[in-house]
Amino acid sequence: MRLWSLHPKYLDAQGLVALWREALLARAVLRGKTRGYKHHPQLDRFRSHRHPLSAINAYLYSIHVEASARGYAFDAGKIGPRRPVALIPVATGQIRHEWKHLRHKLSKRAPYASKRWSTTKSPGTHSLFRRVDGPIASWERTNQ
Image (cartoon, helix red, strand yellow):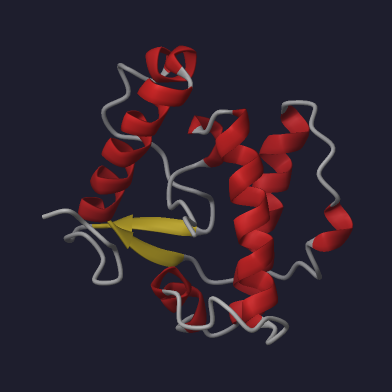
């Protein structure tokens, strides 16, 4: 499961569809509707939010907005109620890590997207997150 902190505009079509599906799975986990993925570390930041379901709904909504802008027909009925939510902090180290990871994926899977974003040095975050100084998140799996 990969719930990107990066803005969904950076994802290629395959990545955007995967993010939608994984965020829907995350929503199901947070609602207690699944058996698997209950302890997935990427869910920690949603679980620690004061309103986890509202936070994942906000996350899904932004993905839906991006998909709609591209002409995709993601089912908005799967999102759940939207409410204003506090932003989740994401560290600059985590953003850098994800950006490097995504750029590597795009170079293999979608060279056109990789080229499009090749000059971007400081990518934007998903609208649910606010940038703060800091290292890679403790829940992140790295090869370091």
